[in-house]
Length: 166
Image (tube, rainbow, N blue to C red; front, side, top):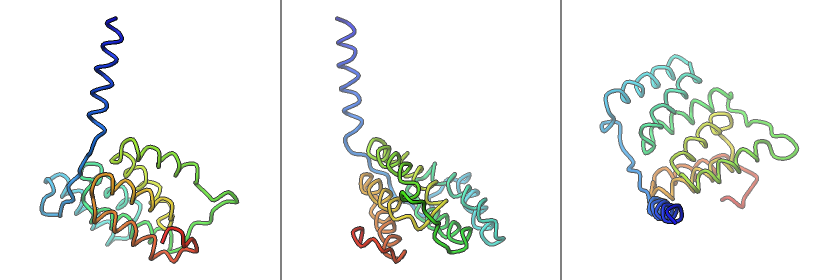
């Protein structure tokens, strides 16, 4: 009997966690000093041309502050510069589709973790429409409207042949 009662308590606690999560979008002035240091290092790494290092630093800032859209924009511009502005060629079956599906399901369960997983995929291919769409879904689940708009702008600016996402 005790086991069933404990399970019901755990289920009610899990149900309470999954209601509505809101992450506040912040500006550079609101960063903690350690995160601000990482952010400034990322900007200087971009100026020096160390794009991969700048992306890692931006991801470190985004893990602490998922609502910091400037780090997301810098990571995306570094990924575009690191790839030479070229779109990544996809295989016969659409490239990393399985990975994006896993990230999509993670984003439905835990949007913050899903956004970080999407950022890692977008570091490899910043023009991936499916990844930007998953980023949009996660941002909307967290009520991060500027981030959601940024994800849709990326889909639109990529001049994709897939007009279903527009």
